[in-house]
Length: 138
Image (cartoon, rainbow, N blue to C red; front, top):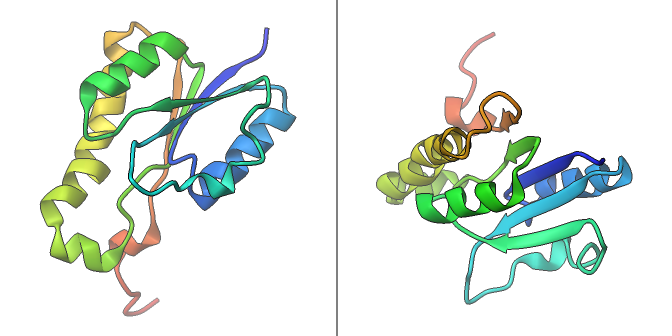
């Protein structure tokens, strides 16, 4: 039986590359995408329609959608690559940034706990060097 991976941020550069890599390794790959008036799926368009590739609508700002997806998919591995990563937006909208980048992680962890997967599901939490700012000295 193949492993099941769930990827948040699958429409981003890293998420799309990871999806390709895991599909090549024989995984069932599930990705979470947000409903939006703009379609950001160009990086994964070539994967849509493949038998082991599945997309689910959800948002790290909505715990019920995350719990529902984790409950349905029952992943062996979760790769949390979704984030609000634009520096200027983080200054302009700090609460939104914290909700997605910090509380969103908590929502993923809580979904795993509520679905009874704490012993079987591995989680990878990605981040960015932009969190730390410019290097002043080495």
